[in-house]
Image 1 (cartoon, helix red, strand yellow):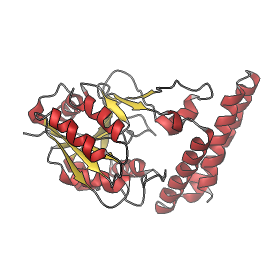
Image 2 (cartoon, one colour):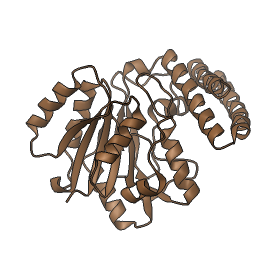
Image 3 (cartoon, helix red, strand yellow):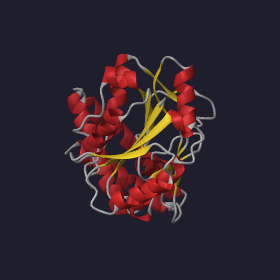
Length: 299
């Protein structure tokens, strides 16, 4: 019986899709307990051909592809959830790899923790071309969304939610709280996100619990093209846009903008410290990130 369904949305990343699938077939959970659903969101590269060759090499695994013609990450993830049959649904992305214990860790968590409606695990950034010197923990977060809260199962820390590329839900959570808001989430090359935060806000409002699962490790592979000033500026602007959309929906635009001013105070103090310690690039990229988030919030 399928216990967990693993959903991977993909769009024009045929090579990295195969990379993540290589980690999927290395899972140590019994094959009969899980399935993998790849959602092709209108890819125009050789995604289908590469996928077909991959599954032909691994016929013993329950891996299949479905197509979602409505463009957007939220549409694709929702399609994967609707196609799944497992008691639990885990969601990852097509630019990462997962640890061999990933699926088993989520199954164990939900089996042993009846009040867990959702969960997330550690996110470790990998930089094939090297981590840039300008990057700090603050500028890394929007790019890689790194996450580590220790080696023990626990409820997620206040103010943090599972990352979209490493999260799991009970099917009952989907029935109660819905799926991803299709007005949020990446669409093609657009970088407006926020769909995961929106989903977990609904869970928070309802009082649902979600847990950190240390053995469900995901490695987020960051290519060189995501390490430029231009990409960080564009990504940060869209972070602000998604925050604005959610603030309007929940009628808290003034509060969110006031909080942004407080973040500027912290940003400027950090920049002063970077400048005094001769780390000019860290100061520049931090201000670049904050400025563009603010632009998005006031757009």
